[in-house]
Amino acid sequence: MDRSLRELRHELLTPVNHVIGYAELARDEAEDEGRDELASKLQIVAERGADLAAGIRDELSGPSGPDPRALARRLGPPYGACREQIEELREGSGSHDREEDLKRIEAGLRTLGVLLQGELSVALEEWDREMVE
Image (cartoon, rainbow, N blue to C red; front, side, top):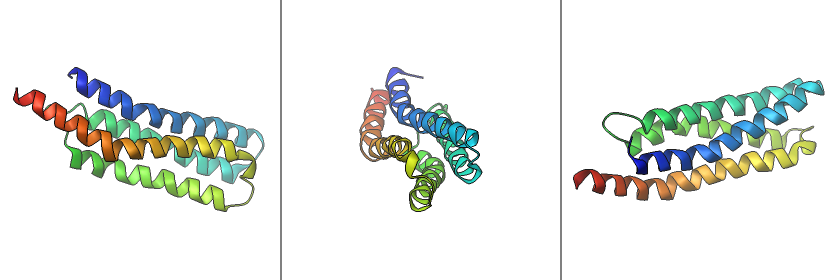
């Protein structure tokens, strides 16, 4: 894998790792407090975050190079599932004391969304130019 793809992968994985890490920490605290429903929703966020990470690694490591459409198809469902769970947690009762955790998870998702919409297309264009040269 060339340097520009490694950098792109790193840029995309960083916010995903924040999502996973904060979701797991909040889940563990919820489990310790006996708040099973909250822990279950946070577990889904962590699992879908892991799906995002796997999709990024797989799609940016392929032998033919990255395919932006394939990446978007692969990341769309787990990204949407994370957003849904966070929204449900915000709307549900009993998660107000997890507001800071939810903000951190949302920040990671927002950052990933921005990267996917903007920097990803720029990075892939640069990669295409390098491959032609």
